[in-house]
Image 1 (cartoon, rainbow, N blue to C red):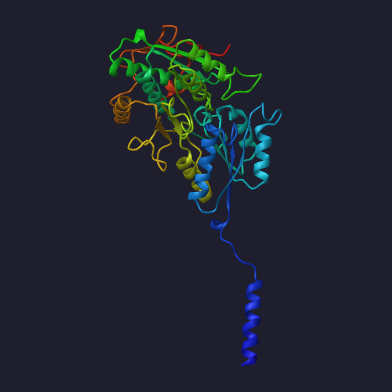
Image 2 (image 1 turned 135 degrees about the vertical axis):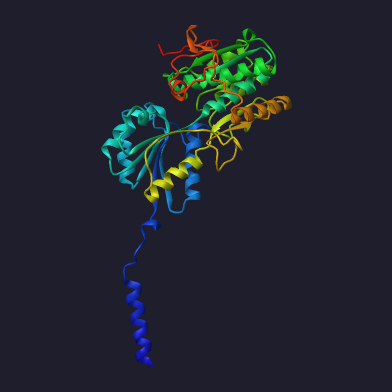
Length: 393
């Protein structure tokens, strides 16, 4: 009996000291995320950061590492390829670059790291043929969310003067500003029955996605000038909530001021008396799909421009773009907005349908002509009826 007990003990020791085979699917899968602003900016970067946390929650073994404030002001002299080298050294196998202005850098990094997989959450390198074989593009059709923002603004304004607080000027920002205008014009004409000539829509650009003191125009001052000039609704196109902050200040001083924020679904918190809502990105489901594909070896770089889930645009598990209605939005406006969203989803309403002219009066779309995705994506000028710069000086 003693000998049998000794043999069992020896066998246990041998087994306990033997190397354990770990299946590939059980190893942590590290993915890296590059954020243009602070991870807690209550805007675009925080929406992406929370998208990454969603992946960690939903996908066993997924582990996110991130670098925020990836912009020339916060990291002067630091390049995207250098940051990718750092993420790669820490074990990242998929890297997601979050901002349009990272286009050149992430393309260079992807070419330098053919062993890794890359996603640019913006951009068009796959469309133009410039993308290395390991780099894909993905973005949400925020045009719909911006149309909803413009609709809510037009249903609320008492002066007929709506302003758009824009970031830098490029194809993306022009088409989003135009989408706000088209949504506002639709509500103004089709729902409220007012002539287009009585709607004023002004665009001012600050020069980047958020305020950089000494580099950009101060969004607080720009928003303040809008309200002081009689614009009673400011729709934000920048990554951070200055439009709401200034609207609340002006309302506290007795002005009739409202704002629509951007990017982050909880942006209205603390601004109940002025917030008409927020078109926002919900990156979780899309990031989950991409990281899952990369983890199981099925990721294929493509260009994706994803629509909201119109069955439930605020479904956190299905819709890349949503619209969170703000507490300051009236009951009538909410009801009409619901109808508008349904009509967008069914295709009954297509606002990128002619006749539409560019700002200089030249034809964009003839009567009844529907814009192609390419025409919308590469919108080169603002539209007739919009006051503001179409190109950077």
